Length: 113
Length: 113
Image 1 (cartoon, rainbow over the protein chains, first blue to last red):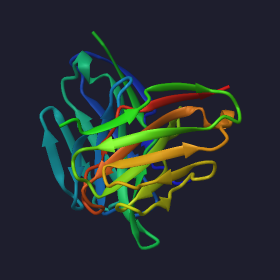
Image 2: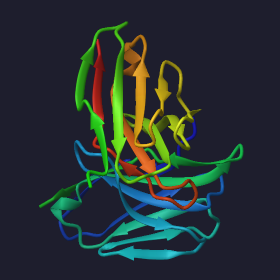
Image 3: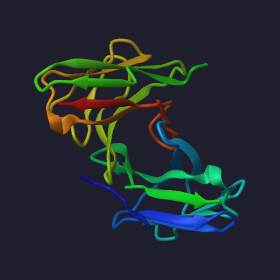
Image 4: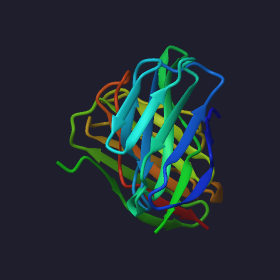
């Protein structure tokens, strides 16, 4: 099945550090989204990107839609313990006449106080 | 406004048993989706629906059936459960297809012995 390459798979960081993660594909996407999943919960949308090159912020989170439309990046500044969770990227593209979401494999973030 | 709800939250089945997972949304969304989440695999689409009375296969539909008799409900059925279907199942809904955020339910953890 189709999955986006997301890296890193997991990361342990100290509270206050900045975090960077990315999502790459060999295919072009028209929309990129970043979700966060807390333990025992469903994913919740953090940021949506609709144009190549777009840079969007949501509080301490900043995400960018890659110029090639094949990748996206998420940065978290000054991490806090509640940032712990799994971060998923998702790309939307036209497949066989239907717009489909493809999800990344997730980046598991642990923040050490 | 409850968003997307799923019933049950946990279930243990024996191989060969059947069950139905219920998803309900109160946002008047047209599109609904069923995903499964396995360790290291991210979210994989099982089936989806683009409106009341419609269903379509996703990436991993084998062993599952779905029905969308009412706009607000999307049912996922397992006719003869197998251990390979042990997973966490998430339902999601969206207003439209293009450029639209998916809202996720809290998940159902299913174990098949």
